[in-house]
Image (cartoon, rainbow, N blue to C red; front, side, top):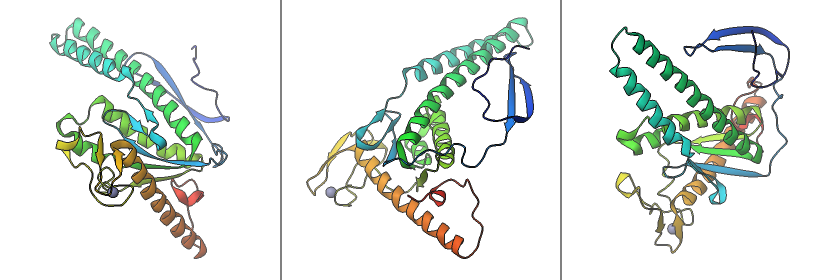
Length: 262
Ligand SMILES: [Zn+2]
């Protein structure tokens, strides 16, 4: 069988699993043992909070934004169309089989394109930042209400999961800010809760605090997430040290600050 390698194997594999996907494609997955520090990166200077956007995909430090890729929407439309086409076919017919396989092929294409895009974003963030602090995704779920579980939301979930595991493997500190932390309502200048709240004020992009500071909604939220994330990472690092001192074992490769506090 001809093989198209997605990337070189980092070490000799101990086993391989071949899977036939519903698209008729075959995939080979290898088990490879790696050293704990195989993906460690040299220390970076900066750290960043990540405000998951509604307008943009994410907002990073200094107002750096990752725009939502245009192909998300296009792909979602194409998937819906293919699903509709399948649902109109007669049960057990040859046309139904055809439509089902067309849908599976499209799903596959969408997944690999999205994965590719996500991996690029995650790699860049992990390479540039020593500390990475995010908000809990549940918050977005609540905010979006009936629009929940869109293609975009699924991508956000995968983005966070990959970010967390890659950060751990690279020796970065990572913290998830509590879902009740009011990242967009807190004034990052004076600490008062004076920002826009809830669903009805979702469209407010800039606001002024009575303390006199004017805020960009997302940049202010990023700053709050970054500060809270730093605090959480420090707490985690402190408790890991205490555990170490008392002789308790700390698992290597654990995500978060325990592995590399600075
Ligand atoms: Zn203020």
